[in-house]
Picture 1: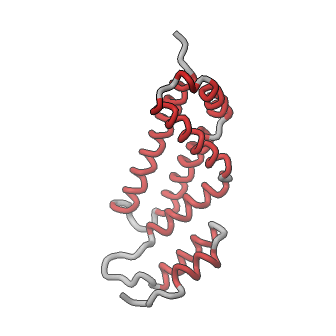
Picture 2: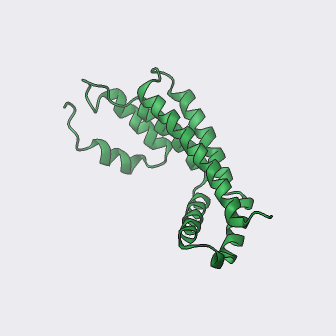
Picture 3: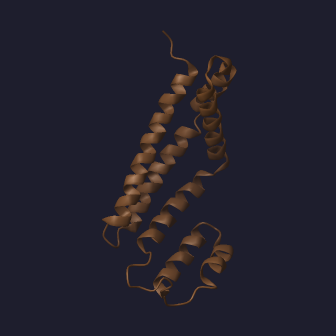
Amino acid sequence: MATTPYKQLEQEWQRLHAFSGALSLLRWDAAVMMPRGSSDVRGEQLAAIETEQHALLTSPKVSRLLERAKAGAGELDDWQQANLREMSRQRDHAIATPISLITRLARATSLARCAGPRPGKSRTSPSSRLISKRCCTWCATAPRCWDRRWASRPTTR
């Protein structure tokens, strides 16, 4: 018996879910266990997985499966039709997001998270301001983000 396009999409989304689980584990490790100075390596790891996740989500295979599943949507129950709409939304969002932005954002957020405030430290220490400014610059949103995040905060807690 041939697998329906919807069932094939479910299999692709299981792979996407596995990527999301790996990303969550890496982010947790960065927040809890990872030693200082490892943010560049972790940023590269996150960027590599997010790039693969994006490639899978924007692949022509997924687009073809979505179109075929939409054509046969009458055979799907309400839950599956809602899943199909969500799959389409996720794919459309991924297509609209350039891969270069995903890569830069993964690296920048890894750096910012690893350099975040530690217990007993000022939230706006010079080093955290510098890293946040660098993070925002990488993401090409420096003026808006810099002003919003740091202009009105006090320098000590």
